[in-house]
Image (cartoon, rainbow, N blue to C red; front, top):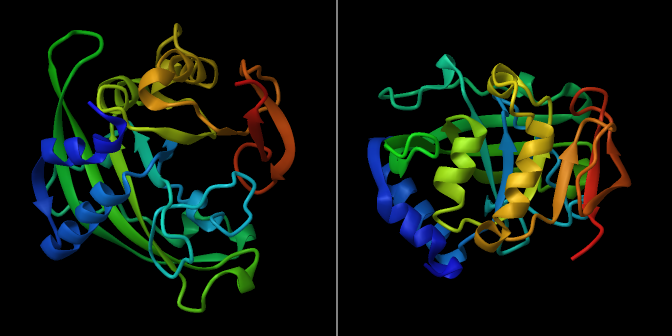
Amino acid sequence: MSRTMAWRKLIERLAPLSVDNRLAWQNLSDKLIKDNPAVYWYPGAGLDLTPLALDLPDNPTGERLFPLSGQEQKRGIILWLNDYADWCNVEQPAFDFGFSKDEIHGELGAALDGVEPVGSFSLATTDYQTGQQANVPVAFFTACIRGGYNLHRRPESGDRYCFAFSAVESEALLRQVFVPNKIQIRVVALIRQGGFSMQRPDFKQYRDLPGILRKNKAAVGRVKAFLVDRDDLTIPGYGPSNHVMPHWGAGGTRLWLQTEG
């Protein structure tokens, strides 16, 4: 499958569970197919929408997030969150996560002006451990962000975004969705990693996810940047930059960039 057709093939395979706004989903799916965006992946994100608050021109990643309105760029990378917990069951009709502005750290000065569900879907995949069929839930939302630490960098009406959420553990999302569908991953946020990975002594998410991404770069591409809230790490092929986001993560988050091709 061609990388340029990745989103078309993925959307064709999505089985609807609950479509809250059919017109919005049609418009969004058309845009996803047309732009075929890469992904800003935030594993173990919970309800943290900080990446939206940090999405301003000249942000240190050099990338902008997938826009619906308000932004000057025509293309962007789409934020895809995942977490694995009972509270994030998107297979329930009329699901409501209750994203709130409280989850965006007050120091960033950004206001979350409403998150609206577009639709929830189920994607039939093959479990990477058992080889049996396993359905991965994928939900799409829109959100509007006003203000931020550089108020003049956003339009007064704010920026509107689309983002995705999957209630699944991180390695399953990577191996069962991103890799087989050749979804390109451009930026990865490794913030407060733990949760399900800490239940498995053989899996250390800060270390192992970059390794799995590196081994599968033929499918998902080469990650451009990692955002990491720990300094006691080694990520082969990447090095820490001087860009630090002090109000995000456990003691601040640093941008790691490629050091080799």
